[in-house]
Image (cartoon, rainbow, N blue to C red; front, side, top):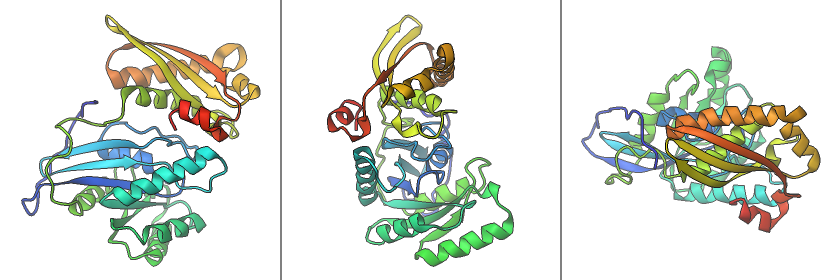
Length: 306
């Protein structure tokens, strides 16, 4: 369990304690993970400018004196081309049916598209309160933002429409307040200060994958998977042995780079993030392995945790 660095205070308007689950949905790369991290106040979900970065359901927990908001970070809903893609879509739909509040994310810097319309029709049958969240407002001028807000309002009868920027923090607090308002009356769901219920090894594998995604060519992102094989604590040092899986030999050489330079860079970037996460010095041992067409192979998917 990870500890929360700083829980923010807020007064309950009606004196009622609320707790429940919320999630952000949207097409890939709509800013869902960045927003989850901004609300929780610490990095629990990996982010990248590559679509479909999120593959696991990660719960981030925000504690307030009047409430507990459990944010479920989900993969982006997309048209699946592989068995992995189908499984990720199933995960998303399963989450939607179980949460109390859904924030549908629309990036302000892109027009409303077919994917947005598809998601808006999908959610109409759900029992959750649905809020529209127009993300990345720091990237557009006021006139464009006004157009986006009008277009979003025509899609669905949203309980609220809130423009935010996770990067600048603009309106993030207001969005959090709105989500909390729609949570049911409930006792606390998690102990104080627990930040996420995600197993440490999964978080570490995700940080390694995030580092590996930086700068690789566009054909590679979905082909990378990471498995932490072993973790040992020796005194003040944590030793981590992890394998990076790709689907082809040609991809293996891209990840390793000339004379191992890329893999070294991945290792040092990931190590810094992991040290911050677990609060101790880390020795990180990375190996790149080929698992042919793992995204389409049920046995490989099971081994890799899907």
